[in-house]
Amino acid sequence: GAGVSQSPSNKVTEKGKDVELRCDPISGHTALYWYRQSLGQGLEFLIYFQGNSAPDKSGLPSDRFSAERTGGSVSTLTIQRTQQEDSAVYLCASSPRLGAEAFFGQGTRLTVV
Amino acid sequence: GQQLNQSPQSMFIQEGEDVSMNCTSSSIFNTWLWYKQDPGEGPVLLIALYKAGELTSNGRLTAQFGITRKDSFLNISASIPSDVGIYFCAGPDSLNQAGTALIFGKGTTLSVSS
Image (tube, rainbow over all chains, first blue to last red; front, side, top):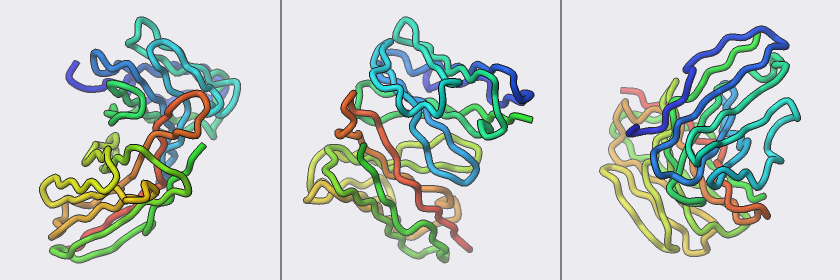
C-alpha cells in the first residue's frame, strides 16, 4: 500500500486475554519500529526490526510482549495476559533503512477493561 | 541509549506569531527528524536533517541541524490554527549497541488561539 497500515484501529479486550496487533509497512522498507504512546505522553520505543531480525528486545515492557516479522514485511505485536496498564496507542513505523526517516501508521488504540 | 530533551514542553500563542522549539542531547546525533502529531493520528514527518549546520525549510517551517550535532531547532512562522498539535524531534540512537533504533523526544505541545 501507499502508507503504513495498522489493524485493528481500535481494540477493547478483557484483562487477562491475549491480543495481536498487526502492521503492514510501506513496500520495500527494511526497517520497522513499534512504539507505545500513553495518553498525553511521548513515544516509548518498544522494538525494531531490520528485515526479519530484531537485534534488541530490551525495550519490550515485560515478557508478556513479543513481536515478529515475516517475509521482511508484515509484523505482529502480541501481548499475552493483558493488564490495564497495557492500555495505550501502539504505533508502527517503517523506514527504507535503519536510522533514516520513518513513516507512521495511524496506530491501534488498545483498551484493557 | 541516548536521550532527547525537548523544550518548551508546551506553548500557547496567538495566531500569526512565530514559534521556536528545540531539541538537545548530551551525545551526537547524525540525523535529526521533526514530526507533528495531530490528535488521534500517527506522527507525520515534517523535516529531515542529515548534515551538521544544515538549514531546511518546508513552507512556513524551518529546521536546523546544530553545528555541534547535539541540538536542533524548529521554527514555525506566522502560525495558523492548524499548526496545533504535538511536535516531536527524533534521531537514530547510535549508543544502542544492537543498532540504530529511532528514538523520540517527549514533544512540544503547541496551542494557537485565533
